[in-house]
Image (cartoon, rainbow, N blue to C red):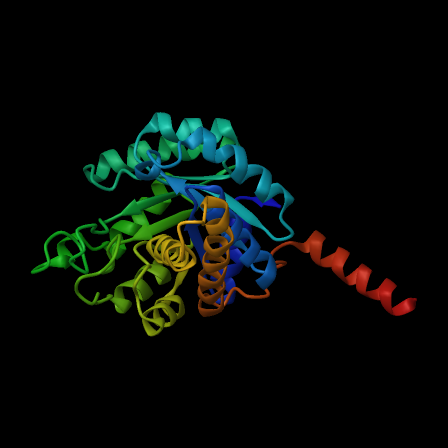
Length: 304
């Protein structure tokens, strides 16, 4: 079923587990992600980011993600990750995305507040949720933000985070606490105390970007301290291509011979993350109507 972030992240925040966002630039990735969610009876967030549009344009991606989400047996959020332009966010909402991220984190603070507040009002009018970022998550593979000697310069300020959420009305907040986008060259050092302080100040779920490559212990501790959503792409991207390389054992193989291997590898990688994040079996969390239907079905089975 297609839902917005609030349907999956508010129960996660309350239950002290996390839900993964897995970006899908093609049908194989999408199938692996959603099949994993159904197998694990887990909520999931699937989507794409503006930087990934060269590999899967927004409109084309929407044609398979949204129908797949609606058909799924578990809650699925279709999310625009790192929407960098207002027009991109508006297009995603028009196409039927149930959630967007409007990333104005590189703008001055007051500009970030103003832009996100405006987009939050629009997203909510569509029944969609909105995520924003405060601080800046690095992407230069240093293991943190762009200044490895002083990465805390880019970290999210807890007091400012409280002000930001109150003024913008966002549904989830991505925070900078020491992670980076992409693969890590140096081991990341997460500021767990900062996560805990921010979680204690604001009512909305916290998001950890740059999740690929973190240790299991990092994930578990970050979730314990207050992270409710974790973004993953590099891990499943690598899993798919490694599986295809392994399956390509002769020149007689074509693309259709490689697709099942990629789907299976992505599914297994996502399942492992769901187990780690603690969201396995949480496919009904927060969905009272669905829970009632399941109880009725179970009672009817026992009466037969």
